[in-house]
Length: 264
Image (cartoon, rainbow, N blue to C red; front, side, top):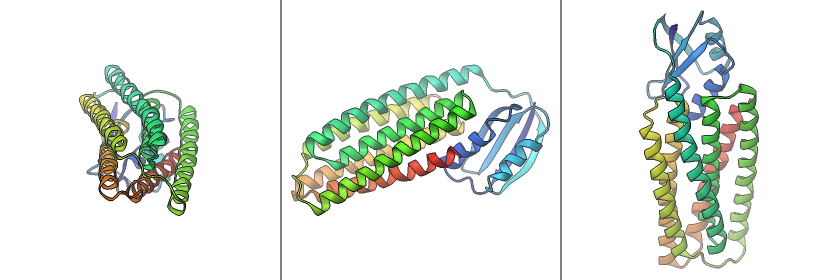
């Protein structure tokens, strides 16, 4: 086996990592991909020549440069794949359950912050689903699912922003701050469990690292909704809830564009 290391100057977020992974997925000679996001390096374990890998990376226009290629005995472990899939299935299930809970309680309590957070949970389920297909699955199926997930996520973000604007203009009842705080606290616990499961997998691969980053961001969103609930209680105003809703819907929309980029 060969180990080829690349410096990729414009690889600075999980979206680029997934883009590279999907671009290289149809090269049969590749055994493993190891990403170092902090140093913007990619190590490819493969058989044969690195020419096809180099050409594919260059076509992404991310300023990739081959810095080293040498013989190695390192190969991907099937046990690692099993552990990754198990972790991803757990966090996918937790996120989908909280999507349903937050969406339901969001409408009942009249909180756009909770509704937005529920859609963020659904968006994460899409990310974890794509990560599962990164562990195994054909490139064609992976791209189809990415496109469908991206379009659905974008539609949800647009509908959510439209509803927030409508509530800014019209008159709405003040959200139930207690439900906002309690549900967001439970979601915070759920995301913390997800983060623990992902960290326990000890995987350094891009799709797992990306999943951990998305989950860490969710913890911040949960705190945001909790703070909005407290402000609703202190001010008696709907605006803290709507502002948090806008921020989260914009995050969901940005995630949709990144997923759609992966499907091309």
